[in-house]
Length: 143
Ligand code: ADP
Ligand code: MG
Image (cartoon, rainbow, N blue to C red; front, side, top):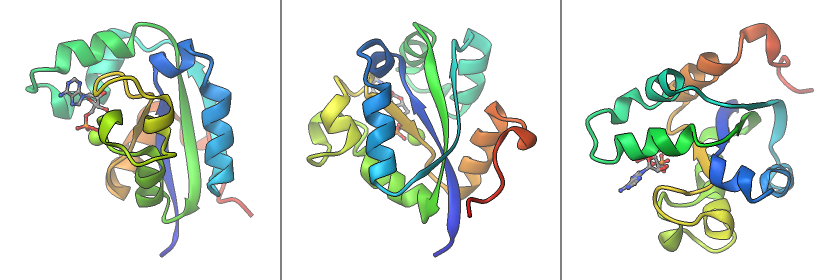
């Protein structure tokens, strides 16, 4: 295993419920370093580009509408085995099926409004981080 980075997005539902701080605290408790964090109102083209892989799915329009409803937090996380570990801490896509004490079980509402995004592979983590953060805006590897 090695030190990796992954992208977390705290989605509009969780930000609206004022759970961004609780989610960041949970992530720190889980051993992640928060390398970068910014609050952003996504635009439609930016959200469509981010979720382009899902363009053909029936829920694509609903997903984009949701993601631009109100601001999100874009968060770069670092840890040993960060990509897979964060997927575990995040929980299953559907909060009803997520394990106890995962972010989605604690803060998600539905399969669409599920509190957070997480990269699904190291390659996609690199692409997703670069989509939102210039390289010189993210700290070098944590000491
Ligand atoms: P994950 O976020 O767990 O990686 P996916 O990549 O499959 O899940 O889906 C991306 C996002 O699209 C989900 O987090 C969720 O917000 C939304 N989504 C997925 N499946 C559905 C669905 N059946 N109905 C509505 N929204 C969905
Ligand atoms: Mg995914």
